[in-house]
Length: 298
Length: 298
View: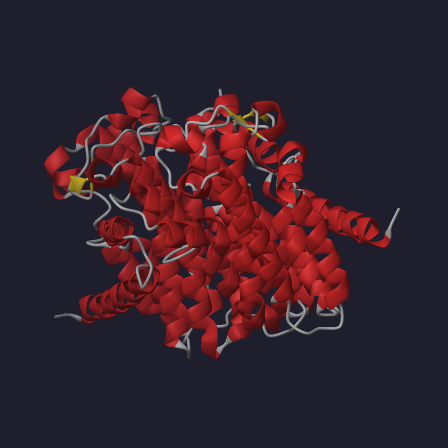
């Protein structure tokens, strides 16, 4: 196994362990049993866990001394992400029957538990941060501020989703909030967890978020459901802004590659910059499924 | 104006100011305009603001030295409460057309914004705490833990609402989570904001929460819509557990009075206990509308 793959596996283990502890805590004594089952269903098995891996990779690159803080920040970011997926899939939004290759949460547990699970995951994110910061409580305020900004209003993922309720949604602002905000929170939280200045890490997250959104738009027009784990062609049906439809497939792929290059170029100077670059290159190679990645490389 | 009324007005001004600042922050630059309008609509004008008044009254009784912390804790509790009302009113739960005497949020802004506003208010609660604790960041972790427990899982108001999704819901556990948990968070947060030990303040909140829930059940069977500001008779229609239906109206009123007496008797020793008792007596007198309060006093 090469070094980068090894790093990735270590990060992955830390993320799953912290998420497991958070879900166990939330579904402890007194929790209604269907709610507990639905919480587990929303978090496990996960998707690519891109955002929390990014948090941990940045924290490592900034030489963090308290792994528990970075682990909790990473898990908190993922809990917010899982919560947003559950709510985005609701009948009033995407009405998505499938997510991560299985029935969406409201399809499996009903709409009411889907609303409550999304709510609970937001609360759990902040509780997870508190537990992780026990050894260094002076880092807590900055991390909550970063996560709150990435998740909430005026320009986090909740606000991003709300652009779909406006008569006109400017594409750049919509994507920056809907996807970029939580990626930016992921990189900034990684830095803050390690005691580094978070500001310089915003661009990396924003560019990766934008790239991920473009890749998502491309997959939606050019992938198939088996590859994607959810239905394709939804953006057109839902009338959502889409880079792939605006720029055409080749234009969108070129734009994606440019964004990834800009992301990597923006990495601030730090002791572990080389390792971080390698992790990000590996992650972004998986943004597109194999059939499209070939076209991107051509 | 008597002293207690004066205290109540002072508390009320502090609560509205902090809520105004939180909503202004969340609907700042970049916020989609319908989301911003819906956030204001969910928070203003408020209901009785019972929970945040309780937080401030307890903080005063514990001689708090940083009013900003108590104000932020009170506002955070109210934001969580407002968020839960918006989600509880959704078509998949109560399908309530009216709330606080005006159209419910989803009736006025649509279901999608109602989901997002509820989410945003949870995030805003934690952001508000961070801002309030700027002068004493060592109080932040305890406050987040208290609020998280009151709001989330396994036994906060979200879990309480989830009991409605179980085949069998034990009445005591359901009410303790659905209503008691946030009242307990309100009193405990007041103590923690003032640097006092929160544990001894749990009973006061739990008893008041239980009393409030019993009063709510009584109002639902014996009030009219104009008095209540929302439709009556919903518990029976929705098949929800109800003290008034289980104990009969007079039994429920006797139970309510007993709970209020137990709440007041549980107030821990502190410098401002007498003032706090007076505020709580005034608040609980308003739990039932005038027509029922007479019957309760008889």
